[in-house]
Image (cartoon, rainbow, N blue to C red):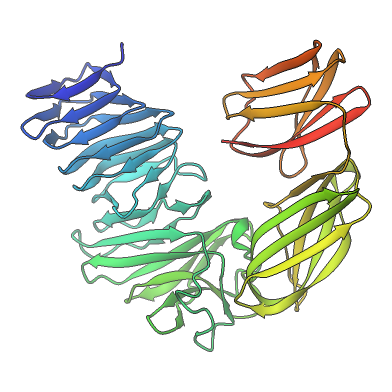
Length: 460
């Protein structure tokens, strides 16, 4: 069906047999729209503006495309089924509320709420939440259902869950922050049963209506640096110090899982704590880079905070993609300030990959596999430029040799694509229309004759 924009000036009925595709929907203050039956309303690269009346049926409102969509206007929005299938997501910018009454489907992109919140009404559910599809902002759950909030921030999916409240009118509001709770919530002030507090992340969970007490569950992945489940704790800031929320149950392993608190009657920020020096490893690494100068690679990194940090192992990738330690740099032990470090590798290859492993005084360690640094110390005689997205990558190569070998590496140093391309004299544009690359950082290695050149590309 042809795309079009709907501007409502009267009353529109969408029936059960229709699938309406539009570039945008705007409901004027004197107008209304009513979806009858199981209609589908698809907004492609557009917005839903409601200043009038939107009467919910059992429809599915779909945001699709690749241009950021939005829900705005001054009126309230009750959706039976909302589907987010837009690679750049959907923003809640309405001064009225946005509520899901049956199902929220995450297919592609984030739901960004800003200072607003997305409401999941009683018995409403969701499917498809993941590391690339979640609520970035605030979510409110209404009702007496146990519920896992599909929260995330800065590329990390990090749910928080509640046990079932006692009343259908109760509601709780949650937000996730992928950042150090300190100094806003001082991690040095804690109950004696807590050895230390996570500096990697925290959640806020507030009981915004009702009196029900519930249990709280926090979810972790490898980025949370959990190393010992039995000593892990849910901890809560009670306006003056971090208190021990307990560990009534854990599920999973050190790579992914969740921990459940004892019964909670007061609400505030929550995060992980540990009853011993274990869990989670207490260093926040905010930058790691490698740069070549006169055949020597200079490695630099910065931490925002450290607790019990003994030293850093500097590791370099060798044959068969294995990392080996090439040096050690002492840590600062305990610090709540930015700390800068550096290390020089005088045995740099044409292309070198580096990573860091942080080791505590008790010999517990954490390897930062999500922060790989690249260096190229070879001067080459051809030029290239890269640009692209997850749908298409283009390489422009200036050369006089007839063919080149292209290898694409992910951040872990694994080869994800190898191909041979023919070249003509001068500028050559090489297109990868179906590269199947996911969003992230890649290293492109191009060999022409005996010469190899590498460069990084962030695919969005």
